[in-house]
Image 1 (cartoon, rainbow over the protein chains, first blue to last red):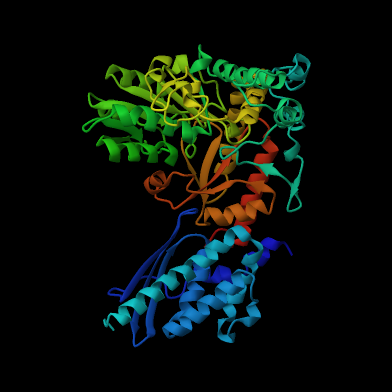
Image 2: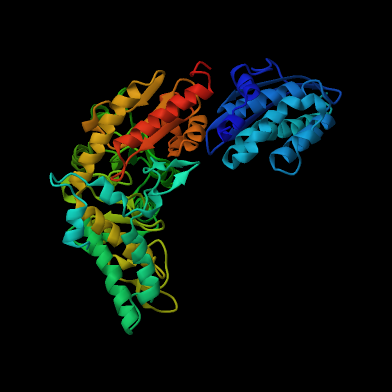
Length: 152
Length: 426
C-alpha cells in the first residue's frame, strides 16, 4: 500500500468533504482566528461557553484536506466538554502528532482521530493537522480569561 | 568558460538544447523519490546546479581559499581575480557596460532592500509615489511598505488584467508627476506573464521617476539586457539560475549608484577611516562591507558561463515549447483552472493552477509520492492570491533540463490525485 493512501484514509476524506460542526455561531462568547502563514490555511473558531463547559462550537476553515479534517474531528470531539477536558484532549492529540504518544493512548471516543496518525509520516503536513487544535487552545485560554473576568 | 567541445555536445545539430546531455551535468536529477524518477518542476523556487558550478565551489575551497582585496600573497590574488572576473561575467550577461555597477548581494530580496534603504529612504518624501503592481512578490512589496511608512510616500498599484497580465493602460494613468519610482516584476513568479518593462521605464522616465525591475524570474530564463530595458535598477538571484544560494545582484545605473549612500559599514567599503569619520570606497565595493561571499560569487560566474554557452534565446525557446506542451496537456485534465496568459509567447516557464477543489497542498503531497516536485502555496504573493480569489495555487515551473515526458508525469500525478480524492468530486 502506498504511503499516500495511508495518509488519505477514507475517514479523513469523509471529514474533509463533510466537515462536522462547520460554520460560525452568530453571537459567540469566544471567537479566535487561526492561520498558517506558510500555506495560507485560515480558520475561524466560535464557541459558547458557560460554567466552564463548551456548550456549542463551530469551525469555519479554508485549507487543505488535512487541516479541514482535523478541524472537523476536533469540533466533534470537543463540543460539550469542559474547558479542562478540552485542554487534556488537545495535549493528548498533540502528543500523538509529535510522536510522543500513540493513537491507542487517546480516549476511546476519539477513535476517528486515529485516522490522523498517518500524517506523522508526512512531517511537512503535521502543522496542517495541528492548526485547528492550536486555534482551539487559544480559544480555551480566551474562554478562561473571560470566565475569570466574570462574563460567564 | 565551458570548452567549445563541451558546448557543442550540449546542443543538437539544429542548435536546440540536447537535454539528455545537459541532464548528465546535473547529478541531483538522477535520483528516485518515493520509488519514482525525480521530476523537478520547482525551478521558480530554486534551480538545480550543474557539476561545473559545484566543482567551482570545491575548487575555490581546495585550491585558492583566501580573502579578497587585501592579501598580497598568491592565493589572495587568485581569489580576488576570480571574484572580480565573476562580476565581469555577470555584467556582460545582462548587457551592463560597466562591471562596477554590479553589486553582489545575498539575493534579489537584499538587492531590492538595498535600493529601498540606500536610495529611496533618502530620496522620497511625503506626497511622492511608488508605483508597483498588484502581483508583486513580497520581496518587492514589503520593502516599499517600510519606505512608505518612514518617508510618507504613497504606494500605488497597477492592476492585473483578467488574463493575468500587467495592465499597461492603467499604468499610463497611474504613473504621473508624483511618481518617483516604478518597481515591478519582469516575469511573474505566479502568473508566468512577462511585464512590458521597457514601456514602463519610458513612462517612469517621462515623469522623472526611476525604474526598478525585479528580474528574479526573468534573468534565469530569457535574454535580459539592461540597456534594452532602459531600467535604472535590476535585481536577481544566482540560485534560480544554476548558481549557489547566498549570492545575488543589484545592478544600478552607474550615475544613480554613484549618489547612493552605503547601508552597511565595515571593511572593504571604505577608502580612509579616522576615529570620527570615514570616506567611501569606489563602486561597487562601497556596497559590499565585510568579507563577501567569495566562493558563491565565483561559482555564480561559472553558472553564467554555462547559461551563456547554451544561449539564453535557446533556453527561452526550449521552455516556451515545454510550456506550450504543458498548457495543452493540463487543459485536458477535467476540473483544471490555469492562471495567467494562455499564449505561450506571452509568458515564461511558470504555470500556476488549481485542480477541482483539491487543495494545492494535497496535490503537492500526492505528486511528491509520484516523484514530481512542484510548489504549492501562496508563492510569497498573498495579495495576488486574494485578487485571484484562491487561498493558494499549485505551480509547476520549468528549466533547461526539463522534458515533455516530465510534463506527462505531472499530468499522471494529477489523475492519481483525482483518484485519491474520488475523481475530484469533493
